[in-house]
Length: 201
Ligand SMILES: Nc1nc2c(c(=O)[nH]1)N[C@H]1C(S)=C(S)[C@@H](COP(=O)(O)O)O[C@H]1N2
Ligand SMILES: [Mo]
Image (cartoon, rainbow, N blue to C red; front, side, top):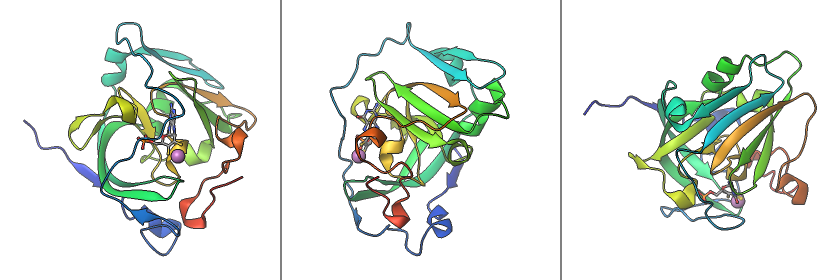
């Protein structure tokens, strides 16, 4: 087995706030599950990941093709809007910029919508996505990402509350106008900065 290089991004809070633990959060060693419904079925032979919208080259990647993209492992904190934070999670996957580069994002793209197998959607401005630590991940703490936590593939957004990270993600669309996703339409904050306690919109 090879030793994996781990990039530590647990200090990214310094760009956003004073304390590693954002205000109003409590640290937990558990990893609670929060989903709007049940775990969706996943068929690795049928699954495809699509990149659409304001790009020069729309992509459709099989699970095998997705797994051949360059990977990174990062140690990060995970902040849930309901008030818990889990420190030092190690996620392995493909960074958003690495994936976006393949599709060659157009100049008029300003926003991104993530979609998932359970019908969940979530949105972020493009500049909040083009960060190495925004990761499409299939591995947590050296093990395959558990299905209830979004396996086979989910997004993690260590600089935002966790609802900005779609579990069971299967596509991204680049948009020329902002749009709102599932929780953003239902009263959660559109911006979701944990150090500014942007919980509700
Ligand atoms: N596809 C999908 N992604 C989702 C959700 C969901 O219901 N469906 N819930 C979001 C919310 S509100 C949170 S807090 C995190 C929870 O991730 P966890 O269950 O791994 O703790 O996933 C986010 N991503
Ligand atoms: Mo959440």
